Image (cartoon, rainbow, N blue to C red; front, side, top):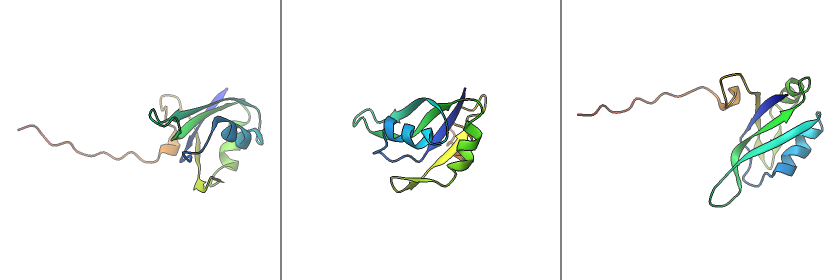
Length: 99
């Protein structure tokens, strides 16, 4: 089983709406969405687990797909990189030195 990282989800996204979207591309084993602790709404990203042979096709098919007015970013999670390559380039901000 392979895990896909889905970024830029709408706060209105639900486990069922994400499952419906991905099930058109193959067998969805599970959907886990990050949720806001105060509102219980989607926090903007989540993970979808699919069968081994289907995720790469799903990631390619969903590239640039819109859901709830937002363009989704989908990537296959890389080993040792829990946020996948969909999170974009890392930005390093220097911290001020203590006096």
